[in-house]
Structure formats: structure tokens, C-alpha cells
Amino acid sequence: MSAALPPPTGIAAGEVPTHIGAYDVRGVIGTGSMGVVYLAHDPVINRPVAIKTIQRHLLDAGAQHQGAAARFRLEAQAAGRLNHRNIVSVYQFGQDQACAYIVMEFVDGHSLGEYLRRPERLTRDEVMCLMVQLLDALHYAHEAGVVHRDIKPANLMVDRDGRLKVTDFGIARTESSQVTRANTVIGSPGYMAPEQYTGAAVDRRVDIFAAGVLLYKLLSGVTPFTGSDEAIMYQIVYGQHGRLSLRGADASLAVFDAIIDSALAKLPAQRFASALDFRDALKAVAGGVVPERLDAKRMLPPRNFAASQTEPTKVVAPPQQPGFVNSVLPSSLPVPTGWDEIDLADLERELTRHVGPVAKVLVRRAARDQVDIREVRRLVASSILDPEVREQFLSATDGSGSRPAFSNSKPAFGNSVLPSHSFTDSQGALPQDGTPLQPSDADKAGAALTVVIGPIGKVLARRCAEGAGTRERFVSRVLEQLTSRVDAKQVEALLWRSMI
Image (cartoon, rainbow, N blue to C red; front, side, top):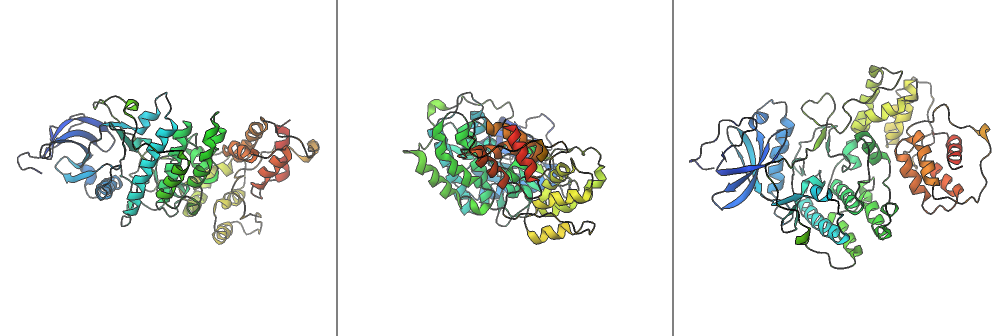
């Protein structure tokens, strides 16, 4: 820092400083709740730089936003140890009287999110080009002990030479960092892996999952998990993604189904073990040489640095942990009719210790069709994977000895029960074997299943319909996926009548 340029004493709201440290400020790249990103000039090396700032008072001891301050310092530490052509370089971390700041490489380009908002879809070769660069960068970071944890289009830049750059390591995790609080979910909805929601151990494979979501979006134009934040969280933890081959008329996308299935596996052990494995799988189906960068004719025009280009990362924390904002969970989940919020609070807190913040969603979803807190407890217990822990959780009931016959071998579909108006056996005999499965049957059955298991019912129906051939085989596949506490006969009758 140059002694000839005294630090500013403060930066008023909306005011652009002339200098930050030894750097001449030339404009604003983006703004956020914690600070501003400026375009500046490095007079020593004579190059443009980007300077990310955080307001100084947020760094003071005891400040409400200490979590944000810690993540800011971690960004400098995590990215600063990385030197890769596809990762934005960090040059310096500094502080003055007004702010703390990170001086980093200036990327003269646009975020990948801006490319995705264009009407024209990226070609398959362009998708391969971007994904190979991303996975190369992630493999390098992982080998250096850094997990990004927030891979999404807004955090990926495409410079004017067509090269991808990974940026924003603000919530990265290094081997020695302890920034994340217990029972806190950090990331962006739709791109977080199941373990980020449930509070399980996090490693490099959360980046594999996010890269799989990105690949799906680049190829199809949509993310595999959609809807409200609550619906997205539920689908990621308990549901299944729809196959690319079922979206649109491009049958060639089917070659990516197995790759995406591996990247988006619920269990980390079932995903690609490394970004390098993911990259090699993509190269195997690329059908030729993958371009090293996007073609110049595909570049967006120069940016206007007067407007904000940032997209905030969403952070979730339990209510008793202040200082975290922009919750992934709805700020106020509705209390089911007939219930008092206090009646559900203890159960939500107890379940949170086992499955993380998703507990609130599970409890309130289960309570919609129940009047007894003991039955709600039985319904949500299936979200606890460890059998012994689950039994301990269930033992907190009234001691009546009533226990559901949980199946450890089946997926956790069926977290809601059928409403009282569901079909019964007296409503007619079921069709006989051999009825061909019609193209519209999966959609009809999926709509019916949403009554039982929520938004993932449509996804489950589509997956079970693949290759089923007959309605009988299709219904059988669906029933195999349900937990044993759901009345299979009622679900079977519901499915058959939906396909009439």
C-alpha cells in the first residue's frame, strides 16, 4: 500500500471512492449487501484489476455479520492459494479505514448466467468446451484442498477470449477452515448437494453435484430441480431428476443420462470420485476434439460497469443463529390447519439434529393430514437413515409400542399420507395384466401421485414409465418405491383410476 495515498476515512452510500489502497478506482462492477466490487487500475504493473470490498464495521469484533466477514477472509485465503488459467487470480488482501478488500484479476467478460439468458441455446460443442474447463479448474482446486461449494452460472465468468473463469470463493472450504456453523446450510438453491441441506459431511463431491446440475441446465435450458425453494430442497434430498432424454425432441442428449445420473447421485460415494473422472466421461461422449475456448463470434458485447452484475449467495441458518440472510428455506413456512406452531416446534428442533434444516419442511408437510403429534413423529422418522438413531427418535412417543414397519431397502418416497377421500377397494376391481402403457399414462399418474408424495410424484412416474411396456409393470415399479407406511392398495387404486 502506497504511503502517498492516504486511506479514505469512509465511503458514503452510493459514493465511488477515487482510490482504494494504492489502486485508482475507475468504476463499479457490482454491488451487494456487504460491499461493492470496483473496477480499478494497478499503477505499479499497469493493469486493470477488480477490487471486492466489505464494509469495515462488519469486520469489527462482535459485529452481527461476523460470518460474512469470516467468509470474506476465507475467499482471499482459498482463491489466493490457487493459480490456474480457469480460476480468477487473487493478488492481495488489504484493509483501510473504510473497508477490507480483495484485489483480484479483472475478467473482461460476462457471467455464464448472462449467456444462458440469451434466446439462442449453446451448442453441444460449446457446452463441452465450458464444462471441460470448469472440471479442470475444480480438479486443480480440489487437489489443492479447496472445495468451492457454490458452483453456479453467476459464479462462472467467460472472458472476452472465450475462456471460462471460476470466481467467488466466498463460501469455499479449505482443509483447515472452520467457518461454517453447525446445522447451517450454505449455497444456492438448485445447485446444492443433498448433504449440504442435511448437514452431513461435505467434501469435493458437492462441487461434482453442482457441476452436474450445470451440465443439465446447459444442455436442456432448465435445471433438474425446479419450483419453490422448499420444493427444490425436497426434490434434491428425496426426489429424482428427470432424464435429459425425456426433455425436448433432441434424442442425442440420451448419451448424457448416465453421466448426469452419476453426477447427481444422492450418496456422495455413488458420484464421480473426482472432477477429473467427470471430465473424462464427458470427453468420451464428445465425439471429437473439445474446443479450448468459445468462438469469438459467440461473445457478448463489452460490459457496462455502472450496473450491478452480482447475484447473492443464499445462506441458511436456524432461527437461533442471527446474522445470516437470504434463507433458502421459506422465511415463514405455513402452519398446517388445526395446528399451533408451538406444538410442532419441539419436534422440528429434535429432527433438525438428525437431518438438518430440512426438518421444518418435513414436519409441517407430514402434519398437513394428521391430528396427532405422535403420528407426525412416525411419519418424519423415515428421513433418519441410521436405524438405531431412528428407533431412538421414535422411542420419544407416548410409549404405546406402535411402530411403523419402515423399510431400509426402499427410497424415502411417500412422506405424506393419502387424504381421507382416497380410493378404496370397494370402488371397483383393478385391470388385468397385459394393458399397454399409453404415452399419457405417466403424466396422469404423476399428477395423482403428487397428492401422496408431493412434487416429486411426477418425476417418479416418468422414471418408472421408462421401458415399463405395460400399465401393470409401471404400477408395480411405482409401488416398489413407496415406503411401507403408505397404503399400497390405496395408491394402486389411485394409479389405475388416474389412467382410465
